[in-house]
Length: 105
Image (tube, rainbow, N blue to C red; front, top):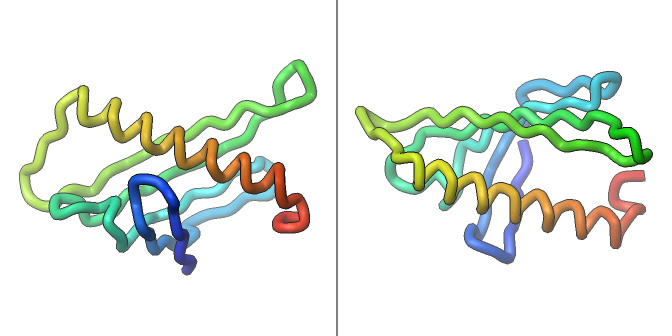
């Protein structure tokens, strides 16, 4: 279990790693606590997979699954706003790792 501190929209999130496959460059995280869940979400599961691209870099593919409280329904614009915030989060993580390669070496 880990705790992530953000300097953006969210103050913190508690998550646990549900699955990790180093050969396939894939991991699945379940966010179980934090202000990103708001009042109407029980959890958010992100599956992240890195695939090589033809330029020597990689493509990051992310799938998400939201477990809601009760009969909450999200509108398309809510989903897009969440997607944009998640993308900002991943860009922040990427910037940190590029600036601090010792963090993952």
